[in-house]
Image 1 (spheres, rainbow, N blue to C red):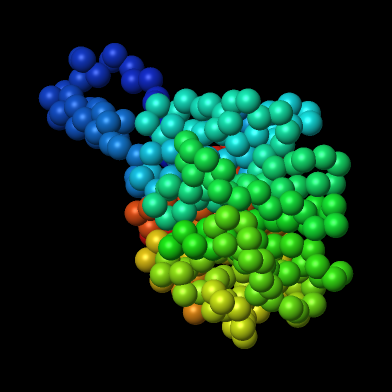
Image 2: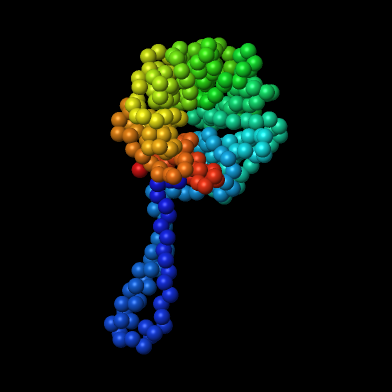
Amino acid sequence: MPCCNPATIEIVPISVGWLSRSPGSFCATLVALAALLTALAAPVSATEPVQLTRDGRLKFSPVVSHDGREIVYVELADPTIYRLTRLNLADGSTKPLHPDARTSEFEPAFSADGKIYAYLKTSGVLRVNLIIQEVGGATLGDVPPADGFSGMRSPAIAPDRKHVVYSFHDGGHQQLFEVDITGKARRALTTSRGINNWPAYSPDGAEVVFGSSRDGDFEIYRMPASGGDAQRLTFSPGQDIRPRFSPDGKQIAFTTHRDGNAEVYVMQSDGSSPRRLTTSPDRDDYPAWYPDGKRLVIVSEQGGRHDLYSISVE
């Protein structure tokens, strides 16, 4: 669970015998009552985690809208279908992003201005297509799996909306590829051994941060958005995965197993000063930034239940 738990206040019954006590005791009791009422009326600290959903269904891959009003995430709608769900942060209501979807859809990604989004859609057994479309509009691109194999994962849209980067199985390894916004002109960005996955653009579009097992363990790397030499940012035992640049590009949030289970960390964009944000006996995962750069939405698993939480990074 998130590292902080909302404080609880125990209300202890007070005997009415104080009515017959001395004036000094009477005043002391009034002071105590005033302090209690003040504590009850105090707002929850901005640093406390806020639970956003309570249904407990399996969830993953949340993303906050560009205006901070909604979160789109993946949930298990029935035993066989994953759907994209919209959470209204003002009233807590949810509804499907695609009400008529009849196959699984997952791993949504939105452009910085919220006008275009990409996601993965199943199109048969072991087949996953990359869909790129306008919000509320036309489909711009539909990238089928090469050779009928569904190795596509983790799309991300460039800030200028000209390219989409994603992970794809190629030649026995998982590489990062780039296509234009119509799904054409595919080009490899990585050629290393192992698995390269979870790409995310920097806010200026100049770099991509991603996770890779090229050196054995999964670590976080960054490289030019056009490809080229990658700089390793983490060096810990245990997987470091799912990195995301903050809106100002100064920090990177990520999931790590360095403490024995999945927890959410944040570090400077050069890999320095890693800082743990969650402490869970189960699992905290899938960090995504709010537009203000002060909070993250995460998926927290507690006792087999999966829900969204908002946590502070300050």
